[in-house]
Image 1 (cartoon, rainbow, N blue to C red):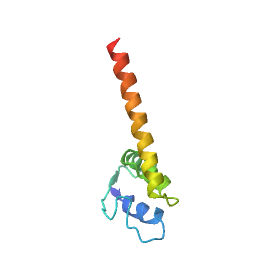
Image 2 (tube, rainbow, N blue to C red):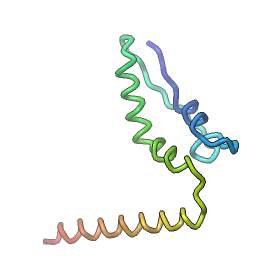
Image 3 (cartoon, one colour):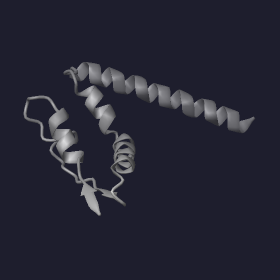
Image 4 (cartoon, rainbow, N blue to C red):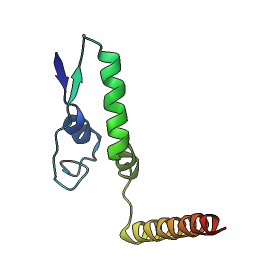
Length: 96
């Protein structure tokens, strides 16, 4: 049985060259995937699923280019408005 622990290595390789250690502001975490019966393909699928759930791909996409603080606030505000509208729609649908 082998273990694959790519999360920290992936995070370090994918960050910009400004010296950031990981995606979560110098918090490092270890993600382990157990390889059973030498089935690496299944382990890689499990790793990708875990990375997706943790939001690593989203972070990598956001950190490809510098985002000004004002742009970040505008994006977060728009996302909050979108979430609120969705919650209102769900609430209205439930009340019918």
